[in-house]
Image (cartoon, rainbow, N blue to C red; front, top):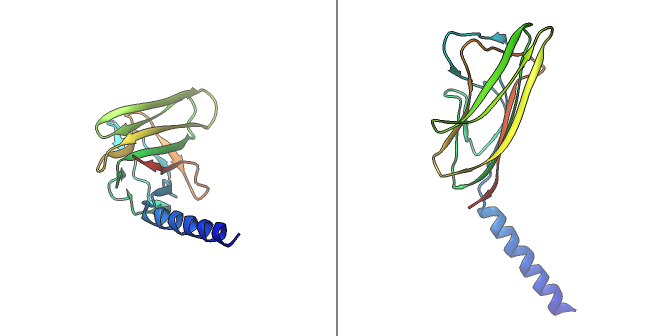
Length: 156
Protein backbone atom coordinates (compact mmCIF):
# COMPACT_ATOMS: atom_id res chain seq x y z
CA UNK A 1 0.00 0.00 0.00
CA UNK A 2 2.79 2.45 0.88
CA UNK A 3 4.61 1.62 -2.35
CA UNK A 4 1.51 2.39 -4.44
CA UNK A 5 0.99 5.64 -2.51
CA UNK A 6 4.59 6.71 -3.20
CA UNK A 7 4.22 5.88 -6.92
CA UNK A 8 1.01 7.93 -7.08
CA UNK A 9 2.67 10.86 -5.31
CA UNK A 10 5.59 10.73 -7.76
CA UNK A 11 3.17 10.68 -10.73
CA UNK A 12 1.31 13.70 -9.33
CA UNK A 13 4.56 15.60 -8.91
CA UNK A 14 5.60 14.74 -12.48
CA UNK A 15 2.25 15.97 -13.82
CA UNK A 16 2.65 19.21 -11.85
CA UNK A 17 6.10 19.74 -13.40
CA UNK A 18 4.77 19.05 -16.90
CA UNK A 19 1.86 21.44 -16.36
CA UNK A 20 4.16 24.17 -15.06
CA UNK A 21 6.24 23.88 -18.23
CA UNK A 22 3.22 24.35 -20.54
CA UNK A 23 2.70 27.84 -21.95
CA UNK A 24 -0.32 29.69 -20.57
CA UNK A 25 -2.07 31.27 -23.56
CA UNK A 26 -5.63 32.64 -23.54
CA UNK A 27 -7.36 35.93 -24.28
CA UNK A 28 -10.86 37.35 -24.11
CA UNK A 29 -11.52 40.83 -25.49
CA UNK A 30 -14.28 43.36 -26.00
CA UNK A 31 -13.98 45.82 -28.87
CA UNK A 32 -14.91 49.24 -27.44
CA UNK A 33 -17.42 51.23 -25.41
CA UNK A 34 -17.77 53.79 -28.24
CA UNK A 35 -20.75 52.45 -30.21
CA UNK A 36 -20.65 52.13 -33.99
CA UNK A 37 -17.30 51.52 -35.74
CA UNK A 38 -17.49 52.04 -39.52
CA UNK A 39 -18.48 51.72 -42.20
CA UNK A 40 -15.21 52.70 -43.88
CA UNK A 41 -14.13 52.94 -47.52
CA UNK A 42 -11.36 50.39 -46.97
CA UNK A 43 -10.91 47.29 -44.82
CA UNK A 44 -9.49 47.78 -41.32
CA UNK A 45 -7.99 45.48 -38.70
CA UNK A 46 -10.22 45.50 -35.62
CA UNK A 47 -8.30 46.56 -32.52
CA UNK A 48 -10.00 45.22 -29.41
CA UNK A 49 -9.20 47.69 -26.64
CA UNK A 50 -11.16 46.10 -23.79
CA UNK A 51 -8.83 43.40 -22.48
CA UNK A 52 -10.76 41.11 -20.17
CA UNK A 53 -8.00 38.48 -20.00
CA UNK A 54 -4.69 38.22 -21.84
CA UNK A 55 -2.74 35.32 -20.32
CA UNK A 56 0.73 35.24 -21.79
CA UNK A 57 0.32 38.79 -23.16
CA UNK A 58 -0.32 37.27 -26.60
CA UNK A 59 -2.78 39.87 -27.90
CA UNK A 60 -1.79 43.46 -28.68
CA UNK A 61 -4.60 46.04 -28.35
CA UNK A 62 -2.32 48.49 -30.19
CA UNK A 63 -2.01 46.41 -33.38
CA UNK A 64 -5.05 44.11 -33.10
CA UNK A 65 -2.81 41.06 -33.57
CA UNK A 66 -2.64 37.80 -31.63
CA UNK A 67 0.89 36.37 -31.92
CA UNK A 68 1.45 32.66 -31.26
CA UNK A 69 4.18 32.18 -28.65
CA UNK A 70 4.62 28.46 -29.49
CA UNK A 71 3.78 26.01 -32.27
CA UNK A 72 0.42 24.48 -31.45
CA UNK A 73 -3.30 24.01 -32.02
CA UNK A 74 -5.28 27.16 -31.13
CA UNK A 75 -9.00 27.81 -30.81
CA UNK A 76 -10.49 31.18 -31.83
CA UNK A 77 -14.04 32.52 -31.63
CA UNK A 78 -15.68 35.87 -32.26
CA UNK A 79 -19.02 37.60 -32.32
CA UNK A 80 -19.69 40.97 -33.91
CA UNK A 81 -22.87 43.02 -33.79
CA UNK A 82 -24.02 45.59 -36.34
CA UNK A 83 -27.02 47.70 -35.35
CA UNK A 84 -27.77 49.10 -38.82
CA UNK A 85 -30.80 48.01 -40.86
CA UNK A 86 -30.49 47.01 -44.51
CA UNK A 87 -26.82 46.16 -44.12
CA UNK A 88 -24.42 43.29 -44.64
CA UNK A 89 -22.65 42.13 -41.48
CA UNK A 90 -19.22 40.83 -42.46
CA UNK A 91 -15.99 40.02 -40.69
CA UNK A 92 -12.90 38.11 -41.82
CA UNK A 93 -10.46 36.12 -39.68
CA UNK A 94 -6.90 36.17 -41.01
CA UNK A 95 -3.97 33.84 -40.31
CA UNK A 96 -0.86 35.80 -41.21
CA UNK A 97 -1.88 37.42 -44.52
CA UNK A 98 -4.39 34.75 -45.56
CA UNK A 99 -8.13 35.02 -45.02
CA UNK A 100 -9.21 31.71 -43.47
CA UNK A 101 -12.73 32.49 -42.30
CA UNK A 102 -15.43 34.71 -43.78
CA UNK A 103 -18.62 35.22 -41.79
CA UNK A 104 -21.55 37.30 -42.96
CA UNK A 105 -25.30 37.83 -43.00
CA UNK A 106 -27.75 40.45 -44.17
CA UNK A 107 -30.47 42.04 -42.07
CA UNK A 108 -33.25 44.16 -43.47
CA UNK A 109 -34.87 45.33 -40.26
CA UNK A 110 -32.77 45.07 -37.11
CA UNK A 111 -29.48 44.64 -35.36
CA UNK A 112 -27.96 41.21 -35.80
CA UNK A 113 -24.75 39.50 -34.90
CA UNK A 114 -22.31 37.26 -36.73
CA UNK A 115 -20.39 34.54 -34.86
CA UNK A 116 -17.91 31.89 -35.82
CA UNK A 117 -15.05 29.80 -34.48
CA UNK A 118 -12.29 27.51 -35.67
CA UNK A 119 -9.12 25.66 -34.70
CA UNK A 120 -5.86 26.60 -36.42
CA UNK A 121 -2.44 25.04 -36.35
CA UNK A 122 0.01 27.90 -35.83
CA UNK A 123 3.77 28.17 -35.85
CA UNK A 124 5.61 30.29 -33.31
CA UNK A 125 5.30 33.93 -34.44
CA UNK A 126 2.19 33.43 -36.61
CA UNK A 127 -0.47 36.12 -36.23
CA UNK A 128 -4.27 35.95 -36.17
CA UNK A 129 -6.57 38.96 -36.41
CA UNK A 130 -10.04 40.11 -37.43
CA UNK A 131 -10.68 42.42 -40.38
CA UNK A 132 -13.73 44.58 -40.94
CA UNK A 133 -14.18 44.83 -44.73
CA UNK A 134 -15.08 48.04 -46.53
CA UNK A 135 -18.73 49.14 -46.19
CA UNK A 136 -19.21 47.05 -43.04
CA UNK A 137 -19.53 48.19 -39.47
CA UNK A 138 -19.66 46.73 -35.98
CA UNK A 139 -21.23 47.96 -32.80
CA UNK A 140 -20.05 47.58 -29.23
CA UNK A 141 -20.70 49.26 -25.91
CA UNK A 142 -20.35 48.44 -22.22
CA UNK A 143 -22.37 45.23 -22.78
CA UNK A 144 -19.59 43.74 -24.98
CA UNK A 145 -21.65 42.80 -28.04
CA UNK A 146 -18.50 42.43 -30.14
CA UNK A 147 -15.77 40.19 -28.74
CA UNK A 148 -12.80 38.01 -29.72
CA UNK A 149 -11.48 35.00 -27.80
CA UNK A 150 -8.63 32.55 -28.28
CA UNK A 151 -6.56 30.01 -26.44
CA UNK A 152 -3.91 27.34 -26.92
CA UNK A 153 -5.46 23.88 -26.98
CA UNK A 154 -2.08 22.11 -26.87
CA UNK A 155 1.49 22.63 -28.09
CA UNK A 156 2.73 20.57 -31.04
